[in-house]
Image 1 (cartoon, rainbow, N blue to C red):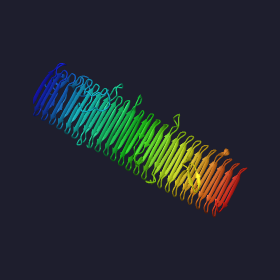
Image 2: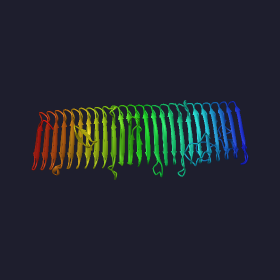
Image 3: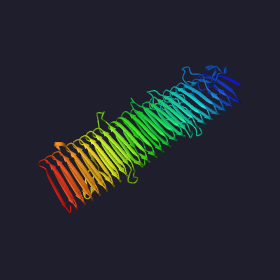
Image 4: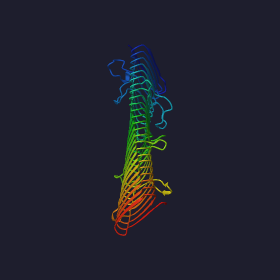
Length: 640
């Protein structure tokens, strides 16, 4: 074994060069340089070489006097080790922090290169301005590499600790089962770390803490094409930024940020992999948190948790993937950007005010079969825009609840299928609890089901289905609720604000429990069925069926105050209407145009009126009125 010890001391005005070059195995170099503008260059080739350990005993911990140490300002260190099981380390820090003291002072720079298996680097920089880059203590990336560590072999390790402000570092590793551990404390730090294409089972652990008065930290972590990779990144401070890229199966990313203006950007191209993101900007005076992340692969998961004002854009392309998002606070925005593939799921929970679920991409919120979106918003001024689920057997389950909040005004816009890409066996389950809520739903395809519920006053629902054998079930509990749609023109009849079903064998079940309710509905196609139940006063039903074998059953029971209104129109063959009104001052208008039609109606109360018009062959009408001051008028003929 060769042991070399070099002690170099320089003044502030002088420049000292210390160089050591050794070939062979088990070399050891120790340099202690004190002063300004100093330079250390070490080149070791062979196996088992050491730069910086104790020169006196292999069992004695290194000290400042017998290790590799630079003390002073604007010093430069360059180390090259080629071979296996090489080590670069300094003295243990006085404070007991991780790493080893190699450079202390201001504006120092280090460049370390190791090639060989089982090599380690342990480096600590203490002071301010190490690496020089400043840019007003900003989180923006540095213009180039200043501090550099290169390792290109298996089972290599880097441990880096920096204390002070304006520190930067660039670390890259090539090979398998390598580890990188970085700790940076104070303002304006940057860490750019990478594990190369052959870096299987690599580990990156990066921790940054900034100062509340500073602009924050910057971190970039990349793992390229190595299976079983893991990255853990923690940033605590203000205005933090991180960018992560991972390529390789069975990999994981764990990202945590707590600060004023947190930003996470990243991609993961892998299968059987996971991403966990936790951002907390509660109490922030500016910014908030922002996540932009995408996954490509199968059996992948994204777990997102955001506290405070935040926004997220996440996407997945593949099958059997899952996105789970929890956002707590005000002003959240989750844009899922869509999932492409089969058997994918999105689960979103938002609590607070002014939150938004905006799920769409170039083709739709979800494109594929057997996908599901489950959304739960608890608060007011909430918005859901799900711009299309395209595929078969998909599920949308969306809830908005503002019953525990002082304000109202939630809205939903949901689309499942389209005219160019109809969906089959789709299900939409919608619930809104609160006042002044708005619901717009459109389903295109066959054998779909829409179930909607609204509870409280002045809610509105716009419902549209096109296709065959579809079902709509709607329940509204409250006053001044409406079910309606756009203006329709059917057989010369202009019907404003009518919800629609177009196709064969469709079914509508709707219940409204409250005063001043409105239902306007049209069905176009064969074998359609519409049920309406309205309970309380001043309710209105407008229904039109165009096609064969249609059936309308309406029950309006408003008590003695009554004031119910029903306008029912059927155009086609073999149609049947059963209209029942309970209360006073109700009115019903029934029109049938076609063959073999039947009307059955009943009014119980006083001051009610019924008008029936049947135009065609084989029609019959039966109307029962009980009470005083009632009137019925029936017209049957060949032309209308």
